[in-house]
Length: 387
Image 1 (tube, one colour):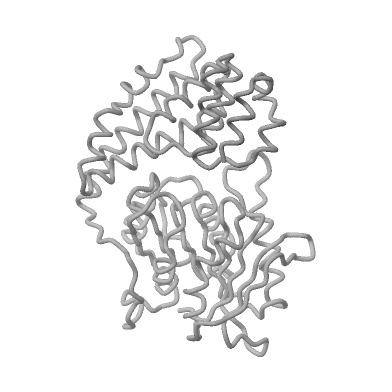
Image 2 (cartoon, rainbow, N blue to C red):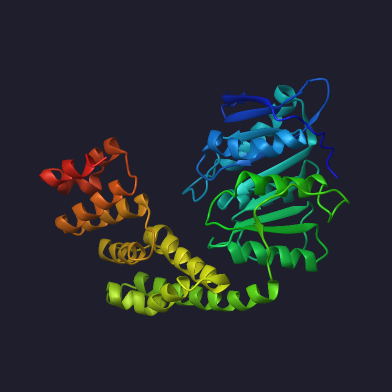
């Protein structure tokens, strides 16, 4: 059990701190902090290095439980090449005992999506340091189910419409079956950090405040009840959808096969049926929303990276953008693919949609070589000035 000490709702934040070797982090010290004693610490790893934004989500829990929080600017997910996250964690952990009187053996790692996987890996490598791991929207390093319980308590957290929901939930089921110290908290939401009240509850479980670990009341939190029998049934349909998506990905990557058009791609995934299910309500609707979210993130981000030519990358992006709620990044990438494919009118349309969805990096678009063919068109400047 971690040695948390209750604290009042006050505290201090320092942004832009740096370790001796240059790794940057934001730091929160709870009210009543003093260097005269050691403090538990939560190291927060946002997958985009949004240190201050992520720190704010964890402050209510840390303030209530009396913990230091260090949130990295250097943590990343989906990095091509050397991953900076593990070196950042190491550097922060070395700096915190002096900077924040952090207890060297009372570290909780909290990651989201890809950095949740990194947190698990670091915890497995340094169990003498890591007292617990909170994985939000992600679980094991390879995304598979663990064969054995890890050497640390683990709390998985996921939104009901998160495409990683089943992975996180199944990991908890597997860990409990293996005798591990594990819990799963679901909340109504999509892929991303949970609301602060849910993070508070997750941290309380690791702190020993859960009735699973001690007879102490948990804080109120907007979590959802999870029926594993129902979820196991839904998981089978989600697995079948993931298989269809994998087959479509193989089709897109095969230069010997014709590029599938939008209608063929949607038919292969049975999108119309899944969209209808997503509108129906209940757990089945959440499962359908997870399937659509999985297709959108795979076809809109991961799959195009490995495709051999522009027409195939465009086909993947067109299909992703046809699914509900395409974001600004996806629409911008679609504009680039259409421009590279020589379809200026469609590219400008996608660029306008990207700006309307929140794309605001005008300077980047003005120098992006993928959009070079559009710059002489008056519609290009007009699209960027829509905001």
